Amino acid sequence: MDNHEVTMEKIVSLCKRRGFVFQSSEIYGGQSGAWDYGPLGIELKKNIQNAWWKEMTQMHDNIVGLDAAILMHPRVWEASGHVANFSDPLVDCKQCKMRYRADNMDQEALASKKCPACGGELTEPRAFNLMFKTHIGPAEDTASVVYLRPETAQGIYVNYKNIIQSNRMKIPFGIAQVGKAFRNEIVTKNFIFRTCEFEQMEMQFFVKPGEDEKWFEYWRGQRWEFYKKYGVCMDKMRWYHHEKLAHYAKDAYDIEYEFPMGFSELEGIHNRTDYDLSRHTEYSGKDMQYIDQDNGADKYIPFIIETSAGLTRNVLMFLCDAYEEQNIAGDGAAEDYRTVLHFHPSIAPVTVAVLPLMKKDGLAELAREIQNELKEDFVTDYDQSGAIGKRYRRQDEVGTPFCITVDYDSKEDGSVTLRFRDSMEQVRIHRSEIAARIREEIKSYKRT
Ligand code: GAP
Image 1 (cartoon, rainbow, N blue to C red):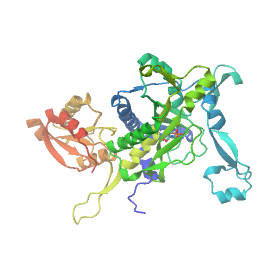
Image 2 (tube, protein in one colour):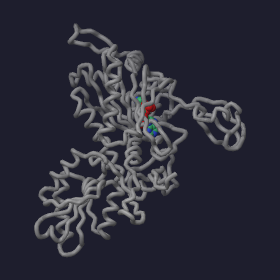
Image 3 (cartoon, protein in one colour):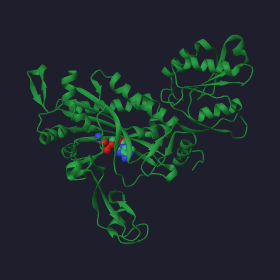
Image 4 (cartoon, rainbow, N blue to C red):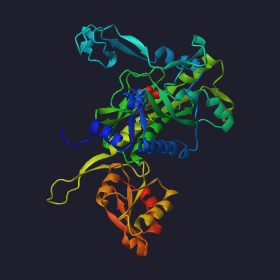
């Protein structure tokens, strides 16, 4: 392997070193399946979330938002099928106590009932429910059981009638939601790819039965275009069509991304039919039919097309996709590598860094003044320590698309240098033009 290729180890190391992601409870040896987002990580995550939210709600007149509670009535999870069906088949080694997911194991090892690690005897596969169960109130009895939600979708289904009534929504329409979800995953590896606590960005689109296949195709197209719009290398994306479907689905595709460990699921687009709303009708006793006032009060249970993306998994995807170790040595010169994150400027944690060439002679004060002017519009950074080349490299490494350098001429004529992360080109502009120029550059950004 080319030793300048992206690997998970390099991503993990950069994330820790530059404050994107830290191990949860690190000083106690870490908590598996959980990660903390540092100053740059939270900016990146928030920007991805905002891009998705804008795409769904601002760009589609017929989609509204919701923020439902994590804790829901336990009957919700009986109705949804999660209590009965949301499980992985597990086998344990009786000798070394290793635990495996039977569906992910080498099938020969499973059939031989021998542990791949130590050769010890394996137990029979048994279903292990992935929902975290806890209790609400002082008594830990069956009446007080609650689950941490394993998907955000159910919060949307149980509110669908409230939203129709309060916001006068007419089919076809959608409800978007971003929030935490929890799964007691057995194998949590590959950094933030699969964790026990994670965030989802889900949109449920309610349609007339019979129109579901058309809308399913529409949403497949929309979700593909989203990643293209935000500069993801599309040759690292592909579709996976499910043959084995979840208990609620009529059809399902995943958008897969080629992570360092190989192609893996990034987002699912599912035709969930009328399964969820029919089940909630049955379990709650409330009528979940839609009354189509425009068509002679026609009544039906809508079909649902779901787009379900992992927000935290998207953070990992955008990091891997942006990462490059680039040889920037001039012709005939020795190798000179910089690490650069080619984030789309509207995803990048910091949009513009302001750098005074020198700390002295009033340049630092002038640079601060310019930074203050830009703060209202952009996330900014200020860095005055070290040689300017080193400072550019530091900004490249965290994906800052624009740097403004303030020098002696800036004092005289108000001009500054605008430096572009990807091309490393520099142009001279007047300080009064910075904000408008950056806005224009963000709008017309194309990844090279
Ligand atoms: N509501 C449908 C649903 O939850 P899913 O395929 O189980 O479908 C959707 O999950 C997305 O949520 C996945 O494509 C993935 O991006 C993210 N996701 C699921 N489990 C995850 C985990 N343990 N850690 C991080 N992200 C996860």
